[in-house]
Image (cartoon, rainbow, N blue to C red; front, top):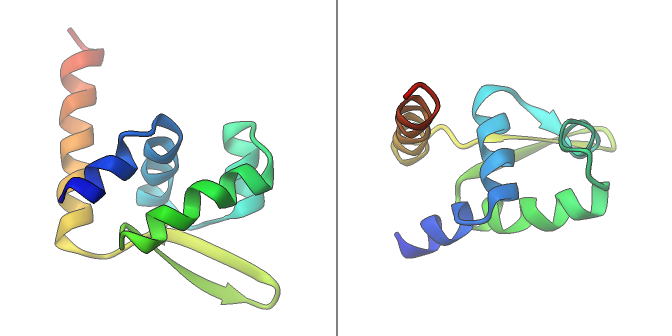
Length: 90
């Protein structure tokens, strides 16, 4: 559990996870959304994937990422939404 929160403790990984909870994206698109380089995005995707928070699939040369379809990721996403509602709408 500590490892999962450690991964999401990094604001870039948190933003990537949030994006991938809502859509499937390749590294280039994530990089464009976050105004980052592709290697920097790949650097953040690796630990998210190793912790089981995201999954990937290959289509030709492109790899697409999305949040894993697990109870854990749904709970984390719900928690993020609640925290954002509390902090953004006060």
